[in-house]
Image 1 (spheres, rainbow, N blue to C red):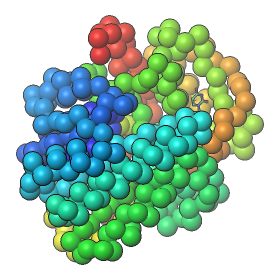
Image 2 (cartoon, rainbow, N blue to C red; image 1 turned 60 degrees about the vertical axis):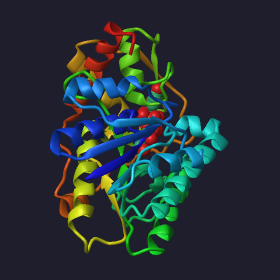
Image 3 (cartoon, helix red, strand yellow; image 1 turned 90 degrees about the horizontal axis):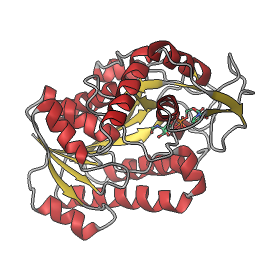
Length: 343
Ligand code: WQD
């Protein structure tokens, strides 16, 4: 099989390529413009697996350049579309950047999928499509509340685009995977998230504070209606997420009766508060984290975690990595980066 991955040098994309190389003989092409990653990811993939994908530095908003990759690589059997901006907080500050990038990139991928008759697509969606939902744990049939951020809205719109597109051609089959909170790094310690200088997400901010890049971490709010007042999320290891993509694509290859469009939650089913995540980090790293309690962050929902029954039933997949192992892998990666700054 030949797979094209958009965003393949990114956090989840690079870990997915590692799992594809470890578990299949698929040929992998990657398109990335390095807006939130580095070409060095491909070297790290090779360091871990002994293989590199064929890769292209292309911005998916450039339809001509994107089509050129597809026209020069005929016979693609499946696409995994990761490429998107994904920070909830940042999207509140830069909505247009998010609508332009996330939606125009997806539209161009679908145009190429149609033009080159590529039958299978896996879409990187997000639990943020559920909004501030009060029925927990969320199932795939839970009602989608109002998106709480432009990022979340780009994922809600993206799913509708895919549903409408899938109806246009019985050849096309799509699964939207709704990630909860991907965290951690490859257990080898040789690949992980390359955060910008000031990451938006909790776990890289914890490890960067612990390594000394920031004086302290601020917990965004402790007055939520949760067991300790801080937000609850379903943190899931990035390699568990990556494995789910391999399983989902295999399902589309093998099961011709699979629906034209389906959505599946990727979570552990366990909700963890911000303070519990900090405690888990302190336990595995044996370091005291300097943090204080601040105001709530715009765009945050108080509590969300997955009902992961459908993934078990439809894909036969479930997450295996514990919160302690997630934090340990994130901490090892932060230490690797401080010892190998070239990355
Ligand atoms: C987690 C919790 C913050 C930073 C993420 C991804 C998004 C999507 C959903 C995949 C929140 C709190 C954070 C800090 C804090 N995943 N926090 N201090 O907002 O749940 O969204 O998961 O598509 O792509 O961004 O994740 O890590 O930003 O925040 O207290 O310095 O940590 O308030 O409660 P979020 P996050």
